[in-house]
Image (cartoon, rainbow, N blue to C red; front, side, top):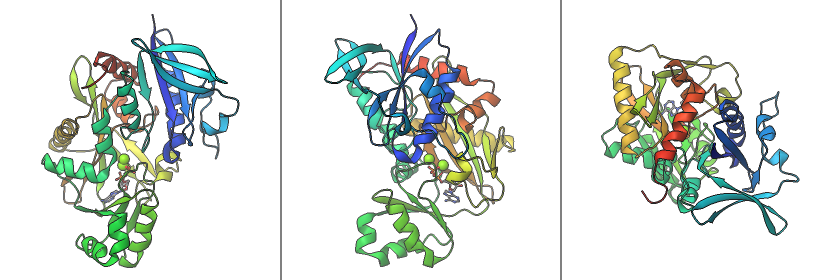
Length: 369
Ligand code: ADP
Ligand code: MG
Ligand code: MG
């Protein structure tokens, strides 16, 4: 009997369309003899809808139009997860009655950022005793909070970029002392919402007068912000880590984001293919540098308690120092994104990577861990 996979996409606004593109890619690569895929889209407003395979396949970037679940929400029945004995079922609600319950073997949430990559949906799956691909609640929640990540990885002895965290309350009550704490970092700095991704709300500040506006902007995304020392001309290298169900922890060849004519790896450069960044795998590194990145990436994966997959991102400074930037527990996962691309360049094809992730999830105990 095929494995029934609940494929979840869409979600909160920031990375909604990216998630839809990912879902189209993953669905397209899955062997439909082996898997019975049930796609569910979450609108930006939080409604869960059961989608057809065709609707997900149609999620493609075309011109300026980015795909979204919202755009196809009309006329859909709401989808519900519920338990019946030992089975987790997905059903659709037509009016007040439940129709078509389907048993689910494993969930694969292709969601990025808050309300998906942050432990929330993982917590729901835990409560349902439903197995799922990727990191658990704690690793997801910590990795999505750049302040919590810094604290946890510093505690594990990993080299992090010097930073300070500010709450909305700190900033509202005392702008002066907030600015003093930031001044200690020097300029430039990077101002970032603590809980975010896809470079949303991030700005580089090179002159002190621009700080208040950058902080105000970052706080529109959440009540905690981090300010990091800005690294000039640092290279950005990324390491894809996979918990292989048969071989244990594996890392792909290190990848590099090579920037051409952009200040930093911002949202437009990441997703809209403006040609200002390209991926290079393997990155041009000495064997010592590559080995050190590999070692630190594995340590970060273990320190955060990651499962399944994570992409660990580093800066290699002008002076040759390696600093850990962040850990992404649901990294970009279209066929052309760094995580699958790095594995492809390391001999593991996209479809095989998806198989391994699902197999790893199925091996896990459902329920409290
Ligand atoms: P996100 O989770 O949104 O990807 P990042 O922390 O990776 O956030 O920041 C996005 C991009 O901003 C990075 O890929 C890099 O180009 C730039 N950046 C972030 N922090 C720094 C820093 N401290 N120094 C230099 N560049 C940075
Ligand atoms: Mg990130
Ligand atoms: Mg990043």
